[in-house]
Image 1 (tube, rainbow, N blue to C red):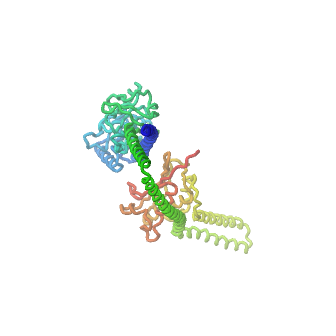
Image 2: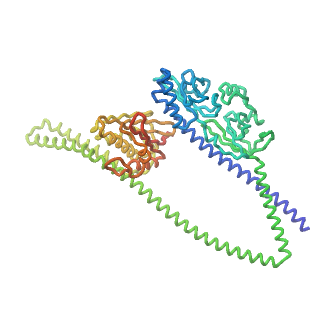
Image 3: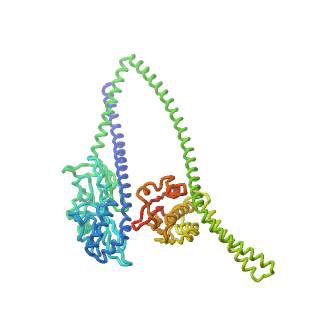
Length: 591
């Protein structure tokens, strides 16, 4: 009877363990797959954003427009080499230039056997999008290279006329380098359900669902996935049904296999990333858990039999339990001590972080005052002129009163009032710049900040006879920042740009403000001697300076200020000479 009851209990126990462990294992495998796919999606979005705006920048080179206007052999060779340089520097798969007819005039792979030169890609949507005046993007299998790639395009304009299209092809290494488990295949589909990448090559260029005839015809016309037919892998009628399913049955190596499905949609490009975990993997894990549970049950049953048969063993077990409890108490006490020490360490760390933040704010303020110190001679010159004029007008006014000449008193008084108001405005401007930051980030109009920064440096600009050119893509663009610290960064960059040209016959500074949907880009370019490779590597390091005076903290502080706005600052040399600094700041989106 005892054996029958034990066997029944064992069956119920294993049934319960199997059911609970199956749900737990399936959930764990899904979470693991979702984490992997989220990682791939995040890195893929970053890579797409990295290359999206590059064609817009590359088309500004004058040689691009020149070859489209006059495609001579010399121009073609020059642009081929230029595009090859572009391709190497941005680590893309290919960069090529197309005429209005869709014929490739120049390409970075012009010397290779699979060169794009003279190939016509006018049928590709990215070409048609660019010819319609907008940025283009498209994923397809290359008709010449037979390599998958994402294409970014941008129109080349001559005034308002579109005369060509520049294209950057990217291999999207994030997908290609995905190291999926052999037992957990990975695939990427478009919005129609066509599989254009899979870690199982048998599933490449197939379809998860039956594609409508018009979709098949359009894919074939665009040669998006080659010229082969897209075989159907499932019986589902829509992609939504596939993505909402818990499991998916697919044929692999001529055998149907059931997979747990985890999917992530990238709405920006209309892709669906899918990780398939074989259901047999869950069965194996559940089997291992049940086997362990069975072993545990057998051990417990044996211990129970031994306990029933031998009271001595029971007393030994009780003694062992007592020793174990004593060890647990000791270990608990140790853990409490460790926990207390950890809490003290956390408290000290919080205090340190608070002091660090305070020190950083004081450093920013010190940098601002140091900049005002560098500008002290200019400030003195600005105030000295109106003070001298004020003294002259005051002496004149006194003489008029003594000689009882009242006809000019009102005019002289008006001039004195204007000078006092001018001095008050200058002092208020520097006082506003010198005040401490409030630490509140909100919408800041870039045009106003640039105007205020130029006003602070007005005397120095006037003294040097410098030419300041300011260009806006959007005059009303606002960024998420704080006005005074952002003004401090701009004043520092403008002051550096002017100092780099102190010995030049004519000083010139270009300020350009561009933006996309997410960020504003403020560039400050001088026409000085530029920066060496060593200076580009160390220009943002603390205490690094090329000036005879100064602490070398201006750019370091500017970098820290930009990080508080979730922005960045970078330095480079302009292709036409001089240094160029770029501020990247998140745009303040209107509600």
